[in-house]
Image (cartoon, rainbow, N blue to C red; front, side, top):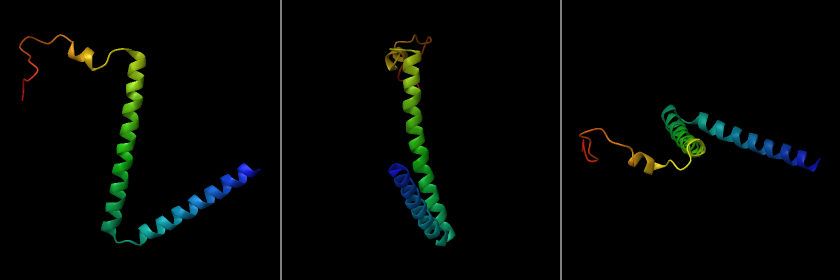
Length: 87
């Protein structure tokens, strides 16, 4: 019962905080609203990308154990390719 009360209080506190942030954000002029939202979305997108990279790396390690960057470096090259080509 105590856990349920604590959870209810926490959710109420988060909802109250979000309402305050939302009212503050909507009271701003349009350009600052867009800038704040874009900054927040870029940071969230970067976090999602980092999580996805870790998850994909772990899945790749399970599917192909021991096949890191060394496996790519040891792969045979086509005739005429050199590591510094194109730079």
